[in-house]
Image 1 (cartoon, rainbow, N blue to C red):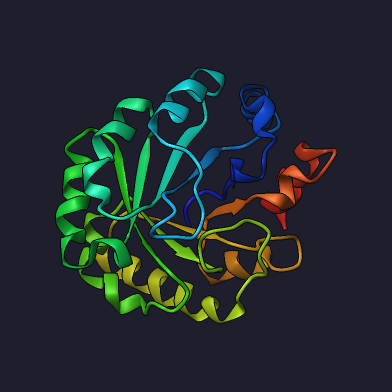
Image 2 (image 1 turned 90 degrees about the vertical axis):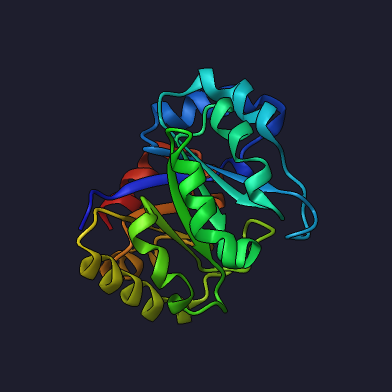
Length: 218
């Protein structure tokens, strides 16, 4: 398995002092800063756009992981790449037959790319794009809001994706996002996930550094 990486989702951070939050969570050991981009149409919430990403880029040397929960994501990938995203992930549900080309377009911008599937989308939906991906993101809640409860039925799908990745022979990270805490993090890692998104589990703690280490080593 690839190195375990902890990716705090800044959706759970204090936006009134977001630069400080990003700086501090990086200091506390975050490998990745997970950026939940929502447009109010693909999901029923609105967060932020490329300018926000650009404005916080200088506060962290961590990997910026832009998770685009938006319709027509191919229209915006260049803006997020220019803003400082290191990897851009797009949903199968938003791209459908345009997924493979969108992934190729992301890579053409000299950033990494990833495909995302919702809890009710079968792993087979992205089998034909595994070789295009640097990362595959599985949602373990339905996207839109932080603080939701983990859906355990996703675990067999992580195992299925891990087998697809192994078969491809490519070095592809497997990311899990939604309701991850100390009670379930070992199970998702055992299933094959190595990039662990955690929002409220990290940001609600006083000692965030300790929580990041607990998630990493559970």
